[in-house]
Amino acid sequence: MIKIGVLASGRGSNFQSIIDGIRGKEIDGRIVALIVDKPEAGAVERAQANGVPYFIVERKEFAGNGEMNRKIAEILEGKKVDLVVLAGYMRIVGKELLEKFRGRMINIHPALLPSFPGLDAQKQAFEHGVKVSGCTVHFVDEGTDTGPIIEQTPVYIGDCKDAHEVSERILPYEHETMRKVVSNFSKGKYVVEGRRVRYEHGL
Ligand code: GAR
Image (cartoon, rainbow, N blue to C red; front, side, top):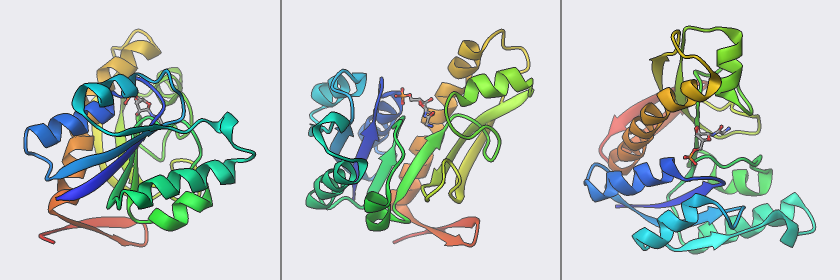
């Protein structure tokens, strides 16, 4: 059973998919902390509804990003988390956090990296006119959406009428991909060799 910490900024549907994966026994784990940087994040209500301890860590409470990241690291270390999941967390993770959780921190991105990193990936994909996009779960490193790729799911978007439709089309695949990767983390380990990631069953 792994201890999972989740960072989110918004509605928290990917957070919910982990809750559901645990409830459905696909994931052998427990979410020991949800951390949000916005008190109004929908993820908070989901935490309350599901008995997940949550922490609101707002940027304005701190003198700098480094201090904020140290606070987040302190919470996650206090809860002894094995895996940190960025589930729609819209801030850059600083080195204060990264150095404590390297190889144990993953992010979901709504495009097939390395295409369309950064903000509004679905809009970028729509405007570029690609016919296939999708989602990527990857390890977090110093860059923006540049870490080694763990899992990807392609999604056809050629008939989408706008960026909103692209987002809606990809979202259920994000949930599925996220659940699968977190499930794998709970039952084995990912080994990073350079940029390549392979999975080994059994702990
Ligand atoms: C998701 O589409 C996620 O991939 C994206 O934010 C959304 C959060 O939704 N993340 C990023 O764009 C990170 N750069 P959710 O709060 O419902 O999980």
